[in-house]
Image 1 (cartoon, rainbow, N blue to C red):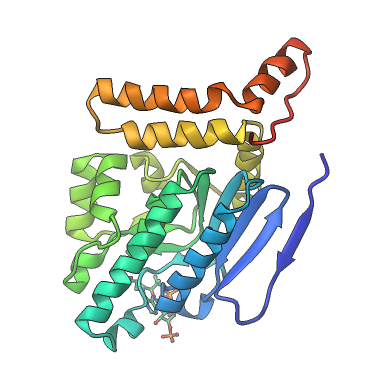
Image 2: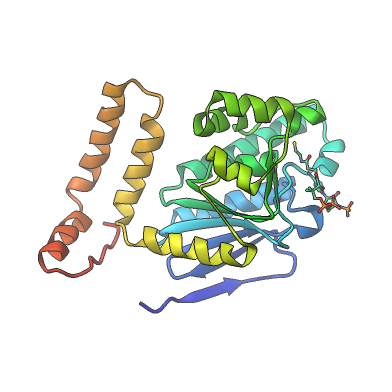
Length: 269
Ligand code: COA
C-alpha cells in the first residue's frame, strides 16, 4: 500500500508533526535546550495529542526529539528557576496530564530515544507502550540530584516496568544508564545503531498497523488497567475489552478475510 506522507514544519514550532500513512510522528523541537519541557512545550504536546485522539485513522504515535542529541532532558530547569511554588505545582499537574494522555492514547505510542532521556523526559517515555533506543541513548531519573523526586509518575511506572529493585537503584542514585544497560533491564525493548532507529520504529509501526485499531485499543487498555488488579477483576477487565470488539465490523472482517485467505481491511469500526 502506498504511504501518504504529509508534514508541517514551521521554524518556531515546539512540536513538529508528520503523518506517514496512519502513523503520527511528534518531534519535540527545542534542540537548543535539549528538548527540555517548558510550559509552552507541555501545552503544545497536550494540544497535539488531543487533536490526534479525535482522528480515528491514527494507528500509532511516535514520540521523538529533534537534533539527535537529546530525546528530552526533562523539565526546563532554567524556566523552573523563575517559577513560584504554585506555578511549579501547576506545571506538575500539566505534565502529569500530558503523561496520562500518552498512556491513555487509544493507539500504541512508541518513544524513539536518541541521546538523553532524563527526568521528565524519561517519564514521558515510560508512559509509551514501546521504547526503542539507539546506542547514543542515556537514560535516568536524576531528580534526587536536584533535591526533588520524579513528579510525573516515574516512581510508579519504572517500578511497574522494571521491578522495585531496579526502580530504587536508578531513582535513589539518580544514575544515568546507557542504552545497552537499559535494554538489559527491560527499560527499552530494543537498542539499535543511530541510523537504524527510524527504520526500526517504522517497521514496528507497520507490524502494529496490521492489527485492528479497536482491537489494539482494547488490548492496550486491558493490559494497563488489569495490571496489579486481583486476577478475577483483571480477567473481568479483559472480558469487557473482548465485549467491546465482539460486535465490531472489524471482527467480522477479520473472520471473513481468514476464510477468504486474504489480508483483512480493518476500518476501526
Ligand atoms: N532544562 C533547560 N535547559 C537544559 C536542560 C534542562 N533540563 N538540559 C539541558 N539544557 C540546555 C543546556 O543548558 C544547554 O543550553 P545552553 O547552551 O544555553 O547552556 C543545552 O541544553 C545543551 O546542553 P549541554 O549540557 O550543553 O549539552 P550536552 O549534550 O553536553 O548535555 C544533557 C545534554 C541533557 C545531557 C545535559 O545538558 C544535562 O545533563 N542536562 C540536565 C538534565 C537534567 O538534570 N534534567 C532534569 C532531571 S530532573
